[in-house]
Length: 280
Image 1 (cartoon, helix red, strand yellow):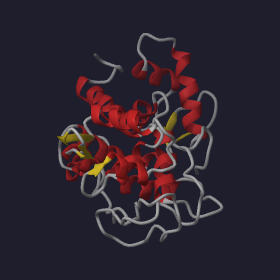
Image 2 (cartoon, one colour):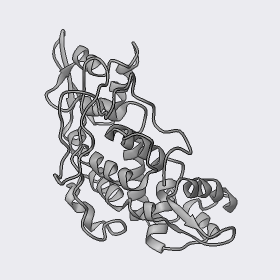
Image 3 (cartoon, rainbow, N blue to C red):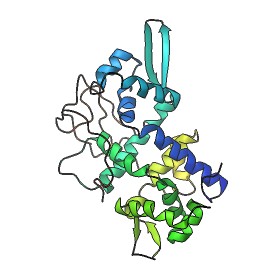
Image 4 (spheres, rainbow, N blue to C red):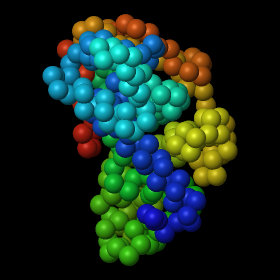
């Protein structure tokens, strides 16, 4: 069923990307996916890598990731069960460095170097706001659009003034620009820079290789930049120091089984960024 007044193919594309974001945004999901990088793990082995999760929190998270088709539960015997990525889950991992690359360029600089995992969680918080993907899609394809016109496209049949709360939030988040009340809206530099991220999510969610992102009809103008290598580490029992996000060129993340995504020692991973957090 259509969610916007856009053409069916575009509407379906936005819906797939929105669903993909909804799979990975919930608290701790990305950290669990990264902890599963490598050979399949028993439940106790995985629990040790995400030891900050309290008793009873890991199992429902794993079930939701299995239901989403990102994690596979394999029962070897009644006493030997392992968890690992599905092919689809493994194919999603290379999207994460693209998010880090965008965040490092466009989110507001913190007073300390942020671990890659926190960059991802902060970015996902912004991208999963209500109607965010659809609004950004329309502005990317049509450059400048009035609020009333956006409402007709994004939420047909609804009171057109309902478009303004999500629009104001995207302006506050630094993804959309406007010159004031009654003026049209356009993507900011940060919003326009989401091309590689949305292109890659679109390719992944439709079952294509991520190399197809550069040919996306809306977001694929120009080649997808190679993401910076970054450390997505897991540790026992809690996060400790690791190397910073590095500056040079491999096209895939570097997975190392030590330390947890951090530049400096922290007692516990933080939750995803709350509304109105760091951004440019």
